[in-house]
Length: 325
Image (tube, rainbow, N blue to C red):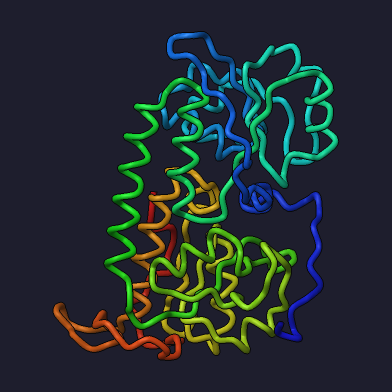
């Protein structure tokens, strides 16, 4: 581990969507019985990503409770809140009389899970740390909620889109990517976080992929030393902040890009939109100001495995503001 990396810690004041979603990384091993098609279902979700997935499979009308920061799609904002990552309102959940509680393993407190069990509430724990796992979870959720056909259609579309992105960027010259999830302190993602795997899918390498943590604070000096070729931030103020450090290749070459945090922090089909933006940013950082049709290794030709990741290069200026949406 880089000696300049600070000791990992979690603080309540972090409200970046990723900080609230980090622990949801595993799919429950049990295979619960699915709902009978046509039977009424009442669902409570305990993470924003799970709420988004309920809507994706066409079961939004059955979502009766969710947590703070469940904002996508817009209809999710009208669903009653039952708490957040730091605490749940158990009495409110009981009053909602859910058929299923979709919990977030590693994020839903163990004490709350134990309370659900004592009250004989039906709980399924979902979560994935892999992009490919999103499709699997959609099918699992569809089976639970009696929406298996819709879920399979959404899952198949997601798999096809991800496969296309992976093939398009496979074997390209890698770009070192620093992904900022907070600046007070400076926070980033480690090897096992789904965003790190998204960076790899797009042909990049996470600047801190050697760190076996989901998210952790780092020193500015460690970022300067590792010299990223692309910096991805979530807020316009961060774009302005990094301009003060032109010694970093990404800053010197105007490769500081903004992607709305929720597009990559939530392990749901919505992530596909963020993936496309991330892949585009990495491709642009890889290819310096070159005419259309350039064929050098840096501009897209496949390269032998084992080449070191690319750190710099002149790239068109792209730091004026958000480029997505």
